[in-house]
Length: 97
Ligand SMILES: [Zn+2]
Image 1 (spheres, rainbow, N blue to C red):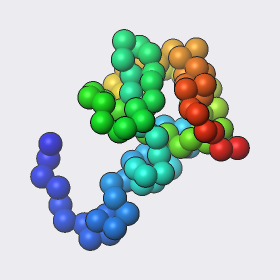
Image 2 (image 1 turned 120 degrees about the horizontal axis):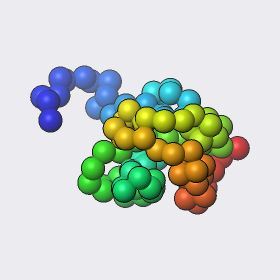
Image 3 (image 1 turned 60 degrees about the horizontal axis):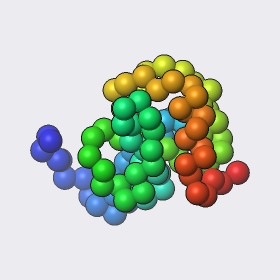
């Protein structure tokens, strides 16, 4: 873990993450953490599971965009097959339109 520079703005809004759907940057509170384990995606509801995580908005557009995209997920450092991507939406209990 690199030394964190002092950023007064971020102490207010919290750490910024990039959505793997729309690629917009947003606060962790707004995004849902997703982890990959053995090629399967799961939602990390508590934001505390070990390993690499990707962040995504709980929005239909972001989940659809993520599902349509193929191949390597940089933030997870692995390839997620399309069926696994499409299955992610079902793991969300609440998806905004
Ligand atoms: Zn998004």
